[in-house]
Image (cartoon, rainbow, N blue to C red):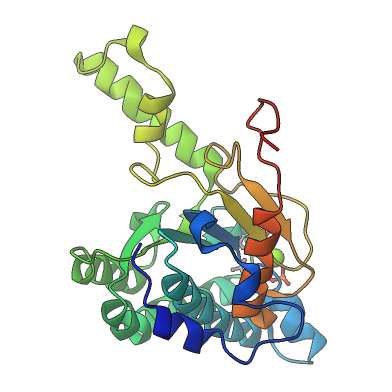
Length: 261
Ligand code: IPE
Ligand code: IPE
Ligand code: MG
């Protein structure tokens, strides 16, 4: 992805002491960075605020990470916003989130246009409240010809549901005679996932210290590098993104083979 050096340096000037652009090898960036945006509720509770204030503050972090990723020239940024299990939360919180998603998407559309970002959704957005779904569909349409970074938003996403759906699609194609079952391989499965056409995440960041995947991209993260920070999502900044990328670049990725070092 093309990088505007001037904008990049400007965006990452005046940083903290421990990390800067100089720590990053721009020739070895992860193509796809994925964030599990966790800890909004705890961030708010720690401040004596309602959980919804944490979700609102989390939007600010997402905007910053989107901009930072564009500046760095990351090809794909994905973000886990709402899982298939998050419907189990109190109705009030679910309603607030759905409203916030719709409002944010409208508010941020100019940013996505300005930055040439293409948006895709991972998950079953047909099951979302009408208003939210319509705003999402409109936004995807508005951004569909953009040629810059891909922003993949996981909303009503669950990896097991995604894999079950892929199985169903493949079985239907086989029963129509469109696929020969003996030819089904890993590429066939990957082509039926919501992430079809996108590279697998190379770096998965989870905030708020939880050491689990919570049903996120189970197939796609087979060889991803994980970075977990105790920082709550609303406190996550462009500098935390650099710290995660620096950590990624220090890993020895062997893919089952032997070290090249
Ligand atoms: C992540 O923050 C946002 C969503 C899952 C929608 P949480 O709401 O999970 O915050 P915690 O984990 O309760 O602190
Ligand atoms: C994972 O966070 C889902 C999102 C960040 C959207 P959760 O807060 O739902 O995960 P658990 O419940 O701690 O596993
Ligand atoms: Mg959580």
